[in-house]
Structure formats: C-alpha cells, structure tokens
Length: 242
Ligand code: ADP
Ligand code: MG
Image 1: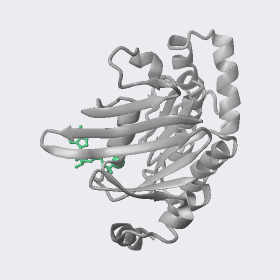
Image 2 (image 1 turned 180 degrees about the vertical axis):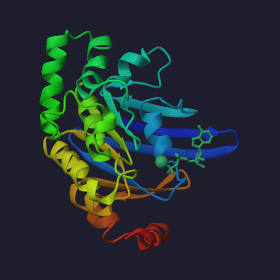
Image 3 (image 1 turned 90 degrees about the horizontal axis):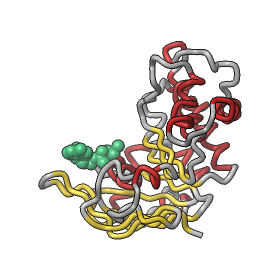
C-alpha cells in the first residue's frame, strides 16, 4: 500500500522553475534515497511533501490524505511526517528530554509521564539513554542529530523525511547517525532520504531517485541507478561523487 503519492508536482521561485513535474509513489516500509547535484530541487521536493513549501501545482497524498487539498487541516495532516534537517534544529535552551516532550505535549496533548516514557524509548533507540538532562551544546553534532531523530520519532510519524542529515557532521560522527537510520529502515519505517552517502543508498534504499534540473532523471533499485545507470547525466553525477 502506498503511503506517499506525489503527482505532477511543480514549484517555481519567481522565474526559477525548481520542480518541473515530479511523480513519486512510496510504498509503506520503503526507503527512497534522493540523490542529485546541488540545486537540483531535492530539498524543495522534501519541503513540498510536508508543505513547508506550497507547490504551484500537483498533488501530495500522505497516508490517504491529500495535503495539497486547500480544505485539509494542514497542521494536523503534517503530523504524519517527521522531518530531520541538515542542521540539528534542537531548542538550545531546553535539555534533551524537554526537546523530545514539548511537541508531544503541546501538539499531541500527551501528559508529561506519557511523553517522557515515549521520549526515553526513543532516546534508547538512538543510543542516547542517559543524556536526558544534557543541553544540546553538551552533545556532539552526531548526538544532536540522533536526538533530533528521536524527537521526530516521538511524534509517531508515518513517514520520516531526512534532508542531508549527515552533511554537517564531522566524518567520524556520520556512521552513528547512518546506523540509527539503518535501524529505523530495518524496523519498517517509511523514509525519504536526501543524501550524498552513496554506500548508505546502495545498502538501505529500496528505490534511488536521481534528480537533476527539477526532474527525476532516473529511478529504480540502487543496483540499477547507482550500479548500472542508463542515463548519461546520472553517470556524470556518480563519477563525481563515487
Ligand atoms: P537541492 O536541495 O537539490 O540542492 P534546492 O531544492 O535547495 O536544491 O534548491 C533548488 C533551487 O531552488 C536552487 O537554485 C535554490 O537556490 C532555489 N531555491 C530554493 N529555495 C528557494 C527559496 N525559498 N527562494 C528562492 N529560491 C529558492
Ligand atoms: Mg538541499
């Protein structure tokens, strides 16, 4: 059953056409890795999926609800999506536990005990048990990013969106974050991941999407798109990053 359906998605900023007709279906439990050169529209695509950007045309359906329907309560519909960005986006004045509980309490209406229980489960999952009282500034970049993942998970998303979650990390911290993402994928989380980590994409993705110039140039299993690309643009890109 598909959990994300994107069709005919267009987005421009002024005269710049950034997305020029994107179609994508994501089955429940699938991991889709989106690769492509800088400026190709990858972040804009993710941001259109949770309507952080309003598409100019086209449809985004998540878990049966059309987010692009003007009558849909977008704040409510967006809760099905967890998002993790390149920067860590934790609240710097709040400790880790409070970072994980605040939206659960304010948005989902959970009481403190329940929110803390769920937060602790997710901290355990990302390898941060025992860091509840730490401030973000007392954590490494990799730990902060894992806390951000735990925070998103605490909202019970149907789909997780990752936009280059390891790009801002020192190389030695990348592995732990990718490890957490691998675990999530193994547990059956549906994930859309913009990444330059080709090894991760090869091993974890069900589908790889190569974008260039606001279109999907090539998509398929990693063995095909990364291993044996049919399009010249894909080959040129891979030759630069591999
Ligand atoms: P990618 O993530 O693949 O690097 P982006 O989706 O971030 O690409 O950006 C695609 C193009 O859209 C770039 O040329 C970028 O400068 C432009 N762009 C992105 N967001 C905005 C915005 N809010 N306003 C104007 N231009 C934007
Ligand atoms: Mg980007």
